Length: 147
Image 1 (tube, one colour):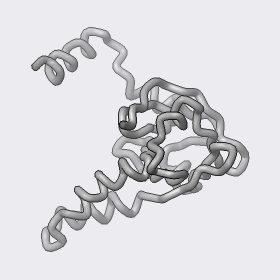
Image 2 (cartoon, helix red, strand yellow; image 1 turned 45 degrees about the vertical axis):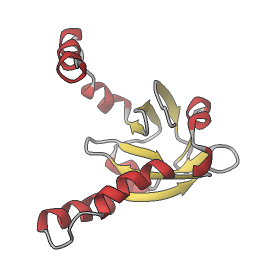
Image 3 (tube, rainbow, N blue to C red; image 1 turned 90 degrees about the vertical axis):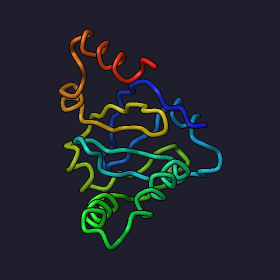
Image 4 (spheres, rainbow, N blue to C red; image 1 turned 60 degrees about the vertical axis):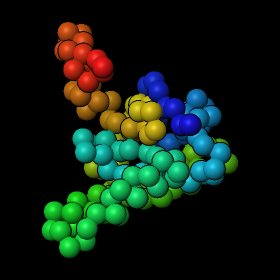
């Protein structure tokens, strides 16, 4: 089972490659090989999935009815922002320039483990999406985790 957690500060090299932190790399499912899938996030970040996890998402989105206009619009916009990359022998992967532009990532980045996926953020944009008030976090936890 994939289980990504924590935050990692990372730097891109001059070619736009990112070294996957060892703790994240260690959590990659063996059956995913070296393939990762990157997609544009709903917020201004990038989402990285092991191939096995992305196939679950792909199954849902590709299974939508193609005769429904909203479904087609979702499929088009979601899938056009997806690229498959491979980890090299050094544990690096190349992030396409258009994706770096979308997420406003230049050199510094924050990787955030999100269970079955990892988000890649520009550090200043990431800060804006964090909850600053512990009370707000408590209320969200109560609302969604209190069962």
